[in-house]
Length: 230
Ligand code: OAD
Image 1 (cartoon, protein in one colour):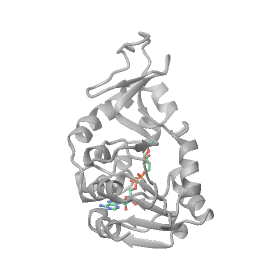
Image 2: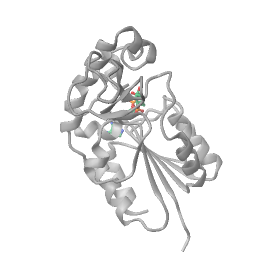
Image 3: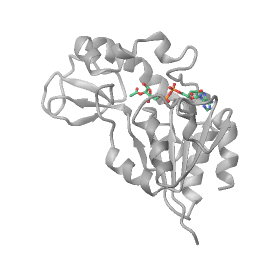
Image 4: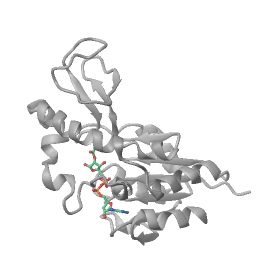
């Protein structure tokens, strides 16, 4: 049997059919909010209330949304695929992969259900609103930040992800515009180490050039069949 490791990178587009807004599409989140105000370290230091309000608004939407056929197809694929590893890396802070039944999900940009104390670095589960005047339950400092990677911060799990990229045989990106690095560069690394690369997106991505195959359309319609036939 030939081993084939699979690397799956997902972005906001995979959750669009679940009713969550993407960032850069028409009427996306970054059309209505300035990214530097609500998703940067400088923005958070300047106006933590605005940043908490932004994520407090998103949290209930994300927590109440349900996975769609694309999330479910990935979870099912992970369970039945036995010819190698299936690594799932998401840029999304929603929990739809987990709700679909995926077990080990690498949230490289953090999670909506967590905040982190910037004083003691402890991570705290957060299912309801957070504000900048709430004390950390561990050290009592008033320094809670959503556990979301802001521009100006290093994404999470980069060492593990680098190893997975070097050893994958098939690289699949789903619902991501290919604009934000380092995630947008993963396809290059995978290709450099010999992987065959696939994009499942509504439209061409910015990093288009590095994909051997592109399937344009809604991921909930295009991805399940493809995974069924790997
Ligand atoms: P974007 O909003 O930049 O891109 C979403 C992509 O999904 C677009 O290219 C759409 O064409 C595509 N899309 C929309 N609906 C789709 C569907 N039903 N099926 C397939 N594709 C669809 O989102 P990301 O690439 O995930 O970071 O953005 C990357 C990062 O930028 C995010 O993680 C976020 C943001 O700033 C942080 O917040 C840290």
